[in-house]
Image 1 (spheres, rainbow, N blue to C red):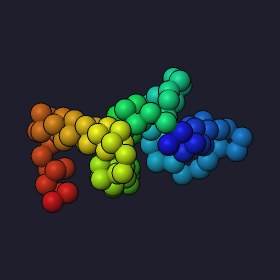
Image 2 (image 1 turned 90 degrees about the vertical axis):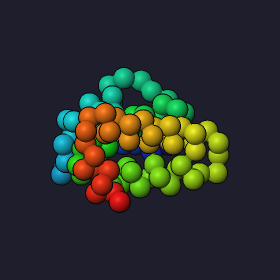
Image 3 (image 1 turned 45 degrees about the vertical axis):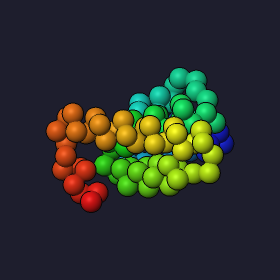
Image 4 (image 1 turned 90 degrees about the horizontal axis):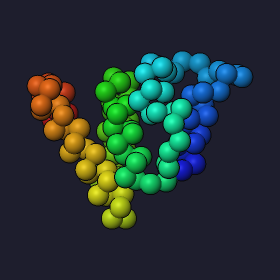
Length: 106
């Protein structure tokens, strides 16, 4: 997670050369709080960050797939953090009345 998170931040902020074709780059950068320091290796910080980017349509399926896989992870910290972030996201959808997103997932 640490290397992947750092690499993602560098790819999103590098201007020389700028990585083309990143959908909703500005929204993604804001969601991942790229400008603020963070500990990507800590699952309690990583999963809530990723879930903040799940509302970007292009990233919904890949993020959701990764989080679901992580829920069944081998380490307790990853499993707990990913399931907590997933349940919090589902709860926020229900509160917002966005049940169509939940229904699309099956």
